[in-house]
Length: 223
Ligand SMILES: [Zn+2]
Ligand SMILES: [Zn+2]
Image 1 (spheres, protein in one colour):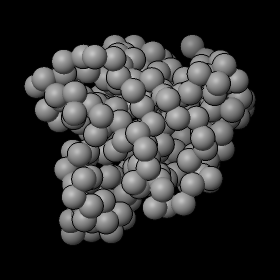
Image 2: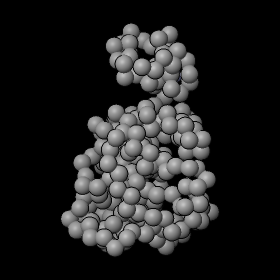
Image 3: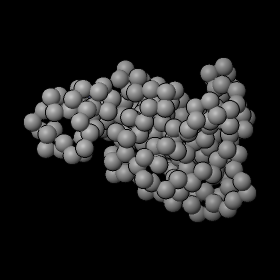
């Protein structure tokens, strides 16, 4: 049983409310840190964008206007809002290899993850993997004890941010899959954050071409 908050290191007993004390066996974060993780309830049915009412958000409508992207990704489900706290937690996770986020979201992930035949993490380039030492998307599945199918490899290493929006939308395929028959399979892509939705759509389009029946994505945060 952890004595201290996994994130801030404060003693859990001192910083927990009476209500939370009942869950102390499973609690990893103090109340203050726990409040920083804001669950997305509702949101856009297409991408989980928070505070979207009445159908698809503008981002989703823009994607659907491109014939080549329309319907490629069934939907994206995200757990938490990308607020200041999440920004810090994600940075600590990705760049410092601090597993707090993966541990803190493990049980929620097991219950909230949509059903699929294969759970496929978004890969890092070999260079990035070497630098970081781990793939944050795969680690989320591993921490949650969920099966992981590393179907994709990354072939394009250029940073997405250096490209224009148009290049990102229409740009060349960044992933590769081995010769596999994915006929009839329902696939769920796993990533840490959904921002523009470009990454998961590139992966989804490749998987669809390999025969996948349906591709959705699941991310910890919605940027
Ligand atoms: Zn804390
Ligand atoms: Zn949307």
